[in-house]
View 1 (cartoon, one colour):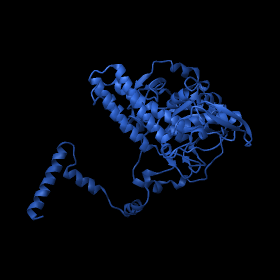
View 2 (cartoon, one colour):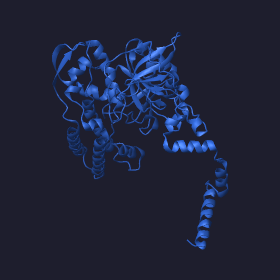
View 3 (cartoon, one colour):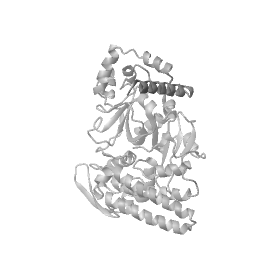
View 4 (cartoon, rainbow, N blue to C red):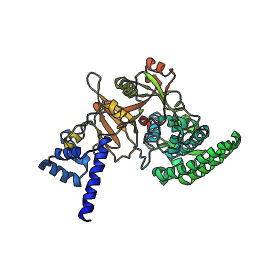
Length: 464
């Protein structure tokens, strides 16, 4: 490049920066000030060298918080066997089934019990496919850039979900033990299967919109939707297997002795070993300081069946949620719990706001509170686990909590995560309880007409 071209390029660059500055861009003067603000100290050079070849998270690990892990709990509800969702987003399903299996193990003195997650997941994927297709039919008169239509086509199918999905699917299709329908590669590695079915659903959605635009009769459209679901069903069978309609279950006691060989359907197995009152005996409470407390909320399209129930909850201060959680644990009853699992020291299985010191590493502060993190999409209800223990001080106040996770027995603390009470305050969002542990004043709030929130509300991305 000759001198003339260099000069021209410099002028164009200067002109470009000046033009940007007029519109709020970075002017040459501003850029000089920004550049000169960096001191390039020896400490910064050492940090650059360290971060060039090491994980930021490893470097930010707070060594002052590495004391021995306290694993003693004053109230603990035991179960048997840690589950593993593998490379899937089914934490919501594993958690909901784990809540139920703990009761069955204790009641029948079982050596262990794991419900088939792939059985429930099969029906979940079929029902979600129908929910999408029916949503497309109902919004067929709206343009493609309508926000609801866009949301539907962006989210035709996923492997994530909430306790609402557990209640929707299990109450309709029942349960089977894992040995009656074991996991497959696709159930443990869901992304490709779900993306392929989702791609087909998008194609089907466009076809349904075209049929509606041509004025096809509702019965004709419904018949075509049935054919589409038949295609989805076949894809699910090929990847997940055929859901059993009846099976034998060999029941053993905790010593391994055979007690009985029972013949079941999925519904009879649910009646004996699960909970048939998932739709009526459980409620969801949340701690979301970005919204008004003591109000009932509902999220549109946030259900797993078209004829199911949207995610509905009462928003409460965290201290009131703790009181209900403690009451449930004292009565040997586990709960569905969801949170944002940030600040996790995965090696120890500890969730603590003091695990990492990113501020000292970066020479700044990260000072948003829970409300501000929600408002800026920095934190949300992202992962479901089973709340199973609390450690109380002499005054009955919680010091720490423990959940059973679904990342395998080698993950965290023997398959569990321990959280400090301070972390609970900051990152706990959702708890599902049996109604008998919920005060009347809270149950009365559920009688309110829910305030409906849009399906795309970032706080309610599906738990995975």
